[in-house]
Image 1 (cartoon, rainbow, N blue to C red):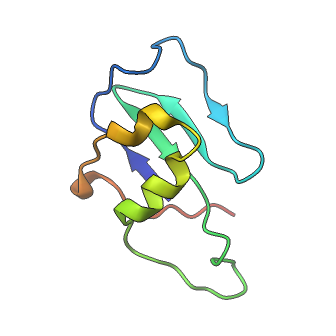
Image 2 (tube, helix red, strand yellow):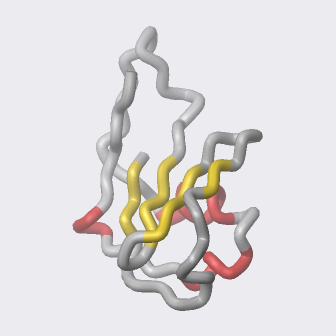
Length: 84
């Protein structure tokens, strides 16, 4: 899943790309942030591919970054990503 956020100033502008190796959650600063994570239920073998991102997905990925609780996303700007 790939989710660009709205501008967000509650996190250092100098932050590098951060990857949580325990679950694959990744974020990098752009105007806001670009959030990325995988869904362990989706594999090339199952060919299951969700076409939407839910706020619960974002919240569960951001649990380790408490300041992201107020992170705003625009549903028209996010969606699934698929990488081999």
